[in-house]
Amino acid sequence: MKKPYRYIDHTADLGIEVSGQGLEELFINIGQALFDTQIVGTIRDKKEMSIDLQSDSLDDLIIDWCRELLYIFAVHGFIPKEYTVRIKDHSLQAQLRGDKFDAHRHRVKLEIKNPTYHNFSLEERKGRYKTSIIFDV
Image (cartoon, rainbow, N blue to C red; front, side, top):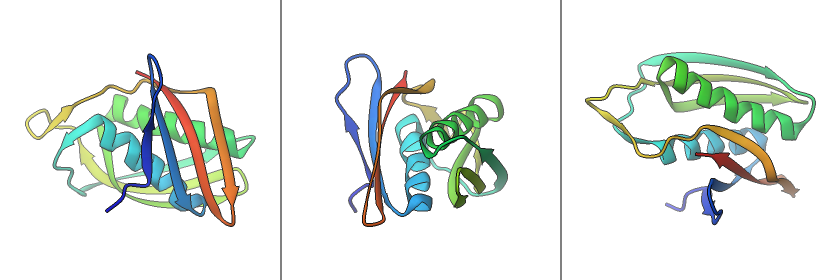
């Protein structure tokens, strides 16, 4: 199955281009791209977490979403597996099911530190969204 994201050549950092049919799918695919890139191992769906975000723009909401996902991994060791996302205007509500990082079952293959606005883009065509995000690694 073709993944809804691809890596962008970028000199020192990580660039990911993500697409989705509708905003909710775009945000889910961003989360999957982040954790597919960072973590190797079996991720169970035995823990739950909620995220509520309010931003000034859709661009900011995407960056805030990335920051929040990276934060819950860095602070709580939470790795999402399943996402339920609702977006209205510039706010997001998400229910996540996933796993807590366990060094016996998981390995970090690349530590992603932060999303940036450098070369950030967001396009929409006929309900299909595509975003490009550069991350510090």
